[in-house]
Image (cartoon, rainbow, N blue to C red; front, side, top):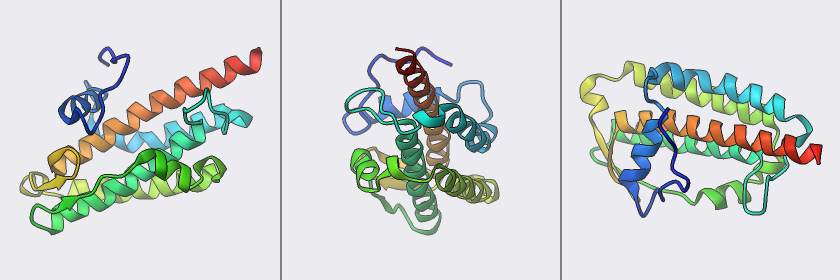
Length: 183
């Protein structure tokens, strides 16, 4: 993978830079394999976090469980966006406030197995949609409220890269939780 920026680009203020950073997580990887493998990798990390699953590494940062909830939220949004792009002509694709979604859905209180089951089902459904789509369908475009035009293909690739971005975040959070336990 490429060198990661110290401060990731803002997805609203710097949409092209954000997309490039997220897609960089797929460098050298098969997009479908990366997409398909994520739920199992997340399950292993949830188990690794153990009783530190809900511990926030510092003020303003998400716990492992909150990151997992955010990944699920992103997959819900992706599922809708993919279907809008296939079914409508240049549909508007709404953005969402990720911090508000994590907070108001109380992801830190959620059942991790339920989140993982939902993510797995959504990913299977979205992957089946991807595999059934023709090249013409993959080129169809929606108009993202914050990032502008995004094709079906780009949306799917961004979902795969986003999962890897957040997986890396979860790994750092697990490591921080372990380090805090040793103090």
